[in-house]
Image 1 (spheres, one colour):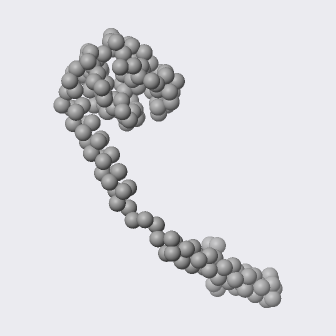
Image 2 (tube, one colour):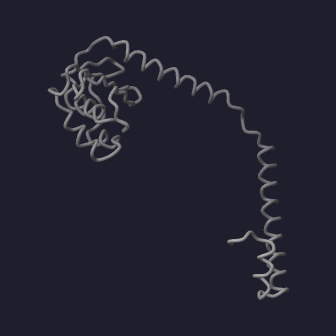
Image 3 (spheres, helix red, strand yellow):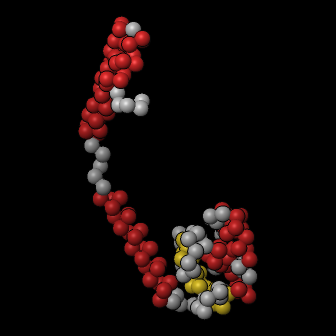
Length: 176
């Protein structure tokens, strides 16, 4: 099951250059204690500095990453490394049943997508008449504001600009 993403496209998913460099360093089989795939996902275990390896998974249908590492970058270096390795050497990945943690993650993603799609279908259609009324009201408010500004500017000119500091100190807050 070859992936149709090039290395350049995968690199575009990275949050920064440091993640790209680290991800490329992890795109070698020796860094992974488990490499497996199904029709809809790729997953692996990458031995990090801790006792337990990091569990990394990638949704192949709608490229998304999940990793148990504490990184705040998204995707993390493990996800990038796994995807780079899969794109270049898919034959190293054993075809297998998805483990429960991958199945649960994918199910949650599908459920969210379904809810989002349902919400989009249930949204009320735009009421064109109400929208036109709101735009007219907004336009009238702008015209009223311009009229008030013109009146204020005419008053300033009529009373003289010399009186502005006195007028401003009475009407505007201190510090303006």
